[in-house]
Amino acid sequence: MGKGDIYVLWNNNEPEWEQELEKDKYNRKFRELINKVRTANVDILVLNNEYETSIKEKSTNLLYITPDFFDRYGITGDFSDREIHKLFCTRFVENIETEKVPPAIAGADFRHEYKKGDVVQGDSGERYRIVGFLKKGSYYAVPTQSRNLESMDHALLMPVTVDLSDNASIMEYLRYSQFAVKDRSELLGIEDMNRKLHLMDSYFVSYSSQLQIVQNDILESIILFGGFGSILLIFSMLGISGMIIQLIHDYQYEYGVNLLCGAEIKDIFIRLVFQVSLLIVAGVCMVFLMAGNSLAFWSVFLMAVVCLLLLYFYSWKKLNRETVIISLRSME
Image 1: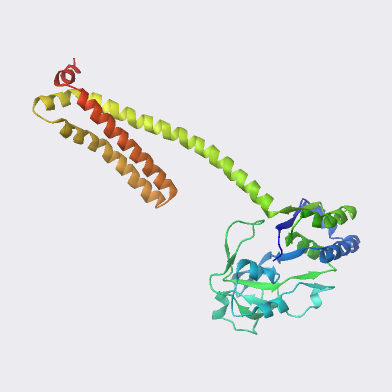
Image 2: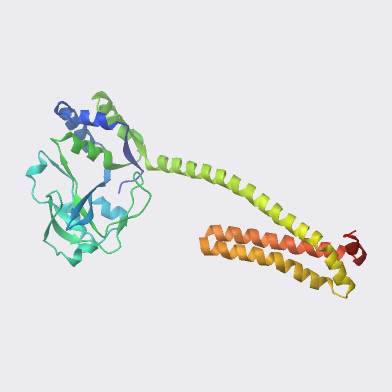
């Protein structure tokens, strides 16, 4: 992989405009642009153009890639680096329909039905020759498309083939290529030519800038939901504290009678805090059943510990300040 940031071509074209660009009159311009890309001082790392087909009535992802795809995602299997760089180099052809059966590396699930050298056929009649199999559990993720990890156990990986006679094929190659450069200025020549030829409404953006936007969005969400959560936390603690105060006040006369009959403060304290503690512990257990061993559970657990400490502190202070006379007079 080249050094520096990774850029992709951000396309602002509407679908209707892309259909206009597919007309034959634009083909010469597209050829000029693709030649500029091929001769530019940039490293084209990966092309990941995903389609879906059906092989033996099973849904299969088709991934068109370059050799760097394997290095970048640490993908291994029963094939060598030499085979990959020989078979998966990007091909530029004049008519893709005249091409031979392309090689393909199959996901681990295909091992049960095929072997090296077998030809598989998709639901549209396309055929692929298996030259190797991926290691079980292989996956990938493309930041510009999805942050989720995609399994390749039932996928076919094929080399990128660009049909120079088809504008749509050239557009897809430009759209899904990833360029590794030290400075964005190295891509300005491609942008300038695209602008002069009046082709796609597009420009290059880096992964780092996209990640910064994602980070800013996440930070805003954290601040927003954190603010609401803090308000709910404050009201919850106030509600629990009010319940404890009200509970002590309602049973103040009963505590006085207990003291008059010889009960000790610690006995009343244990009986008081046991009732409220039981409710809090039951709530924490319910959260654990719903959230499991997660950050949400430990946040609730911490809040419950704080509430219990406040309960014990207030109850002990309140009971030690009360005398038998004050407690009995509370009912007058």
